[in-house]
Image (cartoon, rainbow, N blue to C red; front, side):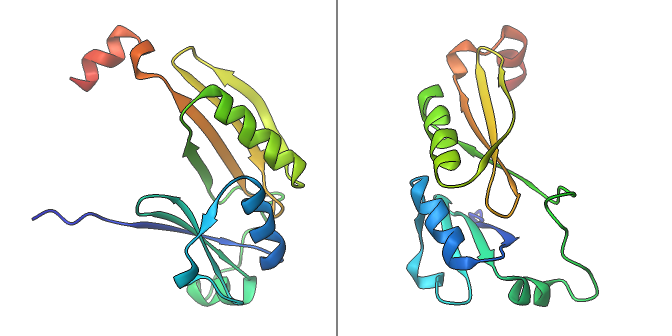
Length: 144
């Protein structure tokens, strides 16, 4: 029997309540079983989560190391799929409206559409839409 793994990406956040409000404005939900005044479990998808942790909690997971300053160092790029290009654009617009900022220019490869934003703590998030029906032939051949 194959084990179906879960993934938890841990991110330090300066203000937990502010971060929860930000991600709710983007349409994300939280797993209330793992959300309290010390941390928040952001649901990305089935078995995929991001734990938002204040530095005092995050630091406990990395003894002997310092927490990266996301304003000057990229420690992780979180990429989230969406069902359409419109959903990508909506996520970016919602991020900006909630206090985030667009990170880089749009990447449009026809079959893949990407945009990125920085959250309130300068972590980079990428929203992407992939249309497999438009994959180039050489990519389809690799997948078969």
